[in-house]
Image 1 (tube, rainbow, N blue to C red):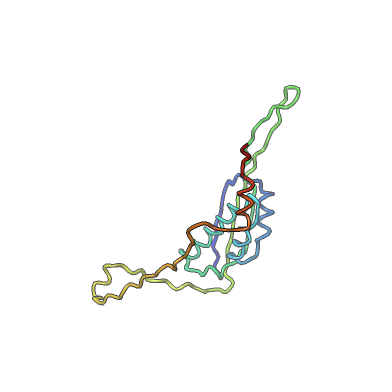
Image 2: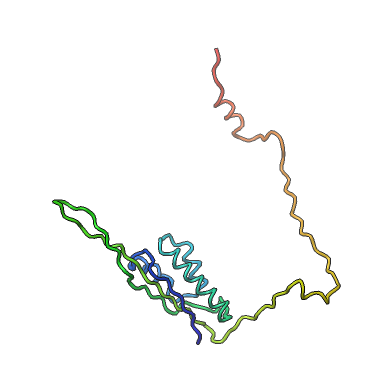
Length: 169
């Protein structure tokens, strides 16, 4: 069974917070996981979506796999380097602040082993020198949108007129 790996190093997010999002999509179909992450309102969802898209693109372009056949086999979140910063505290002391980073590793695998995408041949203009037959170009027309021009009468028309009327004596 073929697998595709992708990784994202030194993401400036705490591993604990990234794991919460990763656990929601672990073991799911890759395309379904992307859909779910789109509606998840958590900061780690953006880099995780980017990582999954990258792995899917690698699988499709480098290994000619089918996107819909891939699922998330493994999803690891490890601790990266901690950036150490200091903040002044009471009585002249200093308190350390650790800005945590994460290393995210993703492994995609195939549901049905060996399913390959058909390669499409690219057509170039100079390849069609032998074809003298020109096919007529079909023009797609946009549907006409009719809009009424003029005064629009509605329920609020009279109210608006009365509301903005000034008393002049």
